[in-house]
Length: 432
Image (cartoon, rainbow, N blue to C red):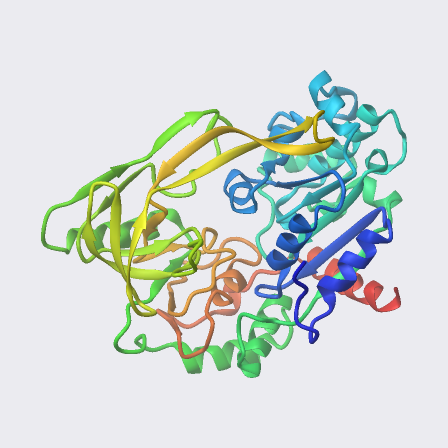
């Protein structure tokens, strides 16, 4: 197994807690701190019978796992404890499970985590938290929050929840987790930029950080490159992309995605457009890593040519590559009696060019990406906690970041409950 650089032993410590049999391990860290690398290391290491889950379909596809709802057979609504009744097939699988790994924990609601706990207790006929399964939670509560409609907020309050976040789950009050903060930033190298991003993430020294970012970045973007524009809403991103395509001469070519099996049945968004319309000169972004490492998820370029089954892209980072259709697999975990292991079984596929229009995209869809050139249009303002931090932290450097308008204090939304939890989390890690 490949271990991280010795300068950052957070991944090593998390794996040590896992190997020591900790009942729960919580890995939290800001953007670009190595959480995804840790997950890949954990998957490759084959430490027992483990599954990797995420709250959304797109996140599950990127993780190579399954959604929480589909794995546990949980309907997309609030369940009271007495309503949790796992199916026979689910119970059989959960009895074999050693470890449950959940990524993007910031987007997991408290009631969902409690339903997971209840399902495991019933399936494993055990009244200990999570039925005795080791649980690893990974993410950053200071990034994007869970979606909780107003009507459901009221229901959660009546059920006794202090808030909607996963750390408000009742099971966590009885289940201590080993805390492992990931604090070393790998995405950026400029210490001043890293400091400003940390201030935006936590809400500390905001006036100084906002002033410095506005002074450096409210300007036309650096010459010679076309940045990806990030904006809060789908409508604004779509308008930018439509204008960009319409302004190009020449004919369009449409690439139609092909879905098979159970792909898309859970209503989650597709990883790329089902019908991808391109022209020569279109700005595109790769949304998968190339096995040959010629491009990565987030690489940006310009369409140089289009074939029936491939697209030529001139990458901003240099070189022209031929990108062919990619097949995403919808995974369902099952137990293989022959191997004695929990295996991911393919139950559906979606085949399409792993490309999306890249004149603009929403801040939400940019989560997890590293971009060399980013321009941010805050429009009428960020509307979700952590949204501005997600957008700003996509940029690798201050030189590659520009702002359509100055950041306002109102653009920085931080939930005080989250800030307090993260502070206590890090303080608890120091005493471990």
